[in-house]
Image (tube, rainbow, N blue to C red; front, side, top):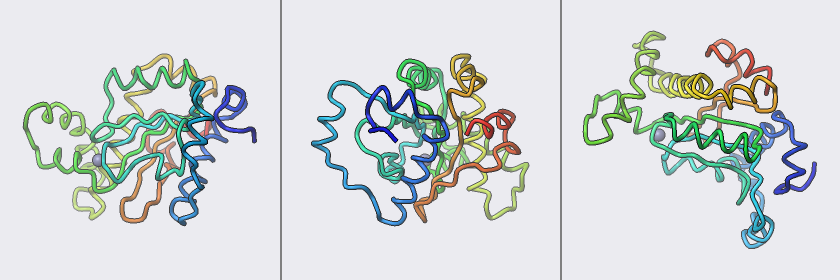
Length: 220
Ligand SMILES: [Zn+2]
């Protein structure tokens, strides 16, 4: 494969290859086989422009920094982070910029286990602007309750449902993203990071989980 951080690299990369870079990076991370990221060298490599191959929407949680858990360096990833990895129009706009104007090939919505935002939403915390943000998580709590409210995996189910919800909002909320996705120029996938193990669980049976997913699976 060509050297990263070039226009040619990004143009030739397929969504599936981009996805594989993330899978391999997380494997290195959990086995402590991280690449030796020479930051000065990376500053030199990326000084004339950026060609990040993936855009990742994840939570602000300090344990879920995407460059670390996917073993990537400067210039590799667009990272959009917000409590509970929820979606609004500004976030959709940022993704549109990444996939249409820069050419990132993979969009990942990454939730995680033990999410404080989800926990607060479940408790019905109301305070300042936090109230509005947590309201966006409520539908995922209702959805997980329908799955099984006595399940000991309930919290995890909410994390998964919340990722699905964000994916749906992105695809239904953006013609630009839907278009690139339908043409096969962009891969879209959900995932949940486990804070106990360091493992990123990519949705394998996404086709069963969301409306958008038949194509999502086909494109990755
Ligand atoms: Zn979180």
